[in-house]
Amino acid sequence: MARMVLPKKLLLFSTRCTEQPNYITFVSVLAACRHAGLVEEGRNCFRAMSQEFGIEPGAEHYSCMAYDLIKGLKVKPDFMVWGSLLAACRIHKHIELGEISAKKLFELDSSNCGYHLLLSNIYADAGRWDAVARMKVSIKENGLAKKYIYMYIHSLKKYSLVLPFVFKEK
Image (tube, one colour):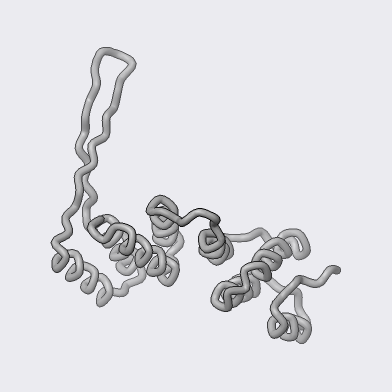
């Protein structure tokens, strides 16, 4: 069976293991590659998961790869890219990556209360109430407020409807 391309220390470790790598092994290897900035090695490991070892990638694996993908974009990532990643972090309960995404979003648009609330909700989902409190203080100190969003619904009949929506804190 072909060997995965791994950073030298991970390769050394993998040769000492008697068992095949599993789902959790790949989460650890991909996270290590991400933290070390070994993007190409991480991509090779990600490909090897399914191609060489028949392990289907899960949310944890994709979250490790998402940040590397964004960092490798040829265009500067905008609020849509970082906002999508932040929303995914809430769904998959990835606090560390959520904090990175939120920091980038705060740099792009510090007046958007939605980013602050989303990060606060990530903290709340994790039971990190001290961080939730800090976010609420930050929102208040910076004079941020919820923004209304209006959705225009057009019917195929004669009537149209405009509905106001608001982001609500939990």
